[in-house]
Length: 166
Image (cartoon, one colour):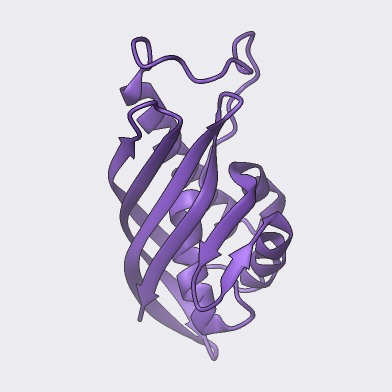
């Protein structure tokens, strides 16, 4: 992701966690902002975020960068070997990453938490995968943390960080 295979590990870890947002079908209420705390369905929102993580994994392994980008806020920050800010920098990084995408990817959410007003959320967990380094398969594992913001009724990543090591 970050123009080097080593950085790819970190980026894929991050991607696995935050970029995995499965598009929500358009419905009459799809543009409705987040519900107030009295009607907010935390379980449904958490499931939506975890589903986004899964979709992200599918998109990165399918080399589909366009499917990753809608899950990022325009001001998103990705922390890895370098700091990436904004969707343009993220797109460039992912275009490099998909040249040699991971396989056998497995991520496990360890939880989704929400701010008191339900406008923000964060999810975290573990990830393992196989990537090619110098033509040889290498198994890696690590952790991720994604910060999400509810933007016009959709969860978007505003910050992410991951740590993946061989």
